[in-house]
Image (cartoon, rainbow, N blue to C red; front, side, top):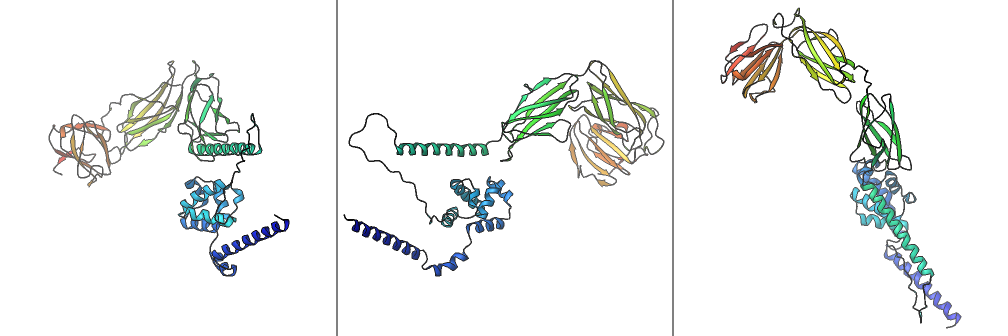
Length: 469
């Protein structure tokens, strides 16, 4: 073939390709002058995404939580700034998931994305040229350019798949946290220690939170790029409990089960217990006999509260107690891990001296006293069911008590308190198993077992039987 013939064939091919492009343009909508208005009227892909999200009524941070796609990538899609995205594979995945979340057709969204990028609505696949076989195979293994390219592509695909798998694994699993110092979950330090540095490992950049028993705000730390973290915590004498957790700042996920650490600071054998009484205050007056005794202690094994009668109340008691009422038995409190205790003490009307005593395991004690007065106001009636069930109906100041309603069956061992300004009236289906304590004074049962009776309590008058049902 001559050189001139080759030029004519090449020109003919170029003319054919130009004609094909022109016909394709006509098939997509005719002349440019006629298709221009339609293109202007159709919103762009970023405008469609922004309008769909605003119609859904969510912001980018809500969309980030729902789709697990970072807000910066969602914002790049809505701005059309695809350079901010990690790559076309991620972009297509983000567009598909975001379209489904916004109620759009993902295939149509991807087609518009390719069209606006200039891909013509289709994406060409890379072709691999297969070398022709040679007439006689050469002996031994040889490297060729195609083999090197294929190996490089294979390594790139493996690295990309590994990276993608790592990201999916990271976003699907919560972070982990470990404590390396102290090396055991339960440890004891020197009795003079007042602080300790906790150390451990977690996800790089993780937010480590250490909850301390008896403290409202946790101690926080951030894991370094190597995944290590450390935090200083205060120690008090006795057992100190710490709960260590971690949160991934990228995914917002926290560890499934925090790590519990217990550090004990021993008490010196010669150290007496410390005791603080928060309630009751010295000289406090109560309108009923339920006196809360609360406070904190350290180096104590037990806290005991005892009461001694200090004389009758001068006014407002409602009932006339005995000249010297029998004091309640001493009560021992359970001490919490943070050293707090709470003991409710029931007292009759009058003046009382409360003694709160803390005892250490070695037998050393510390005690405090509180003088309180009980002057009952109105009617405070404690009803206890002993020896069998009883059906009851109760009127407080002439109105049905809402806890009992039109009547309720109470099991053996149940105790309930009713308070009124003027009177409390109780109908019991079994008078012999219903016991009463009025304004701190024990009355006991007022009838025989199995007898249905109604009793009116209106202090300072004595209880009277009525026919109210």
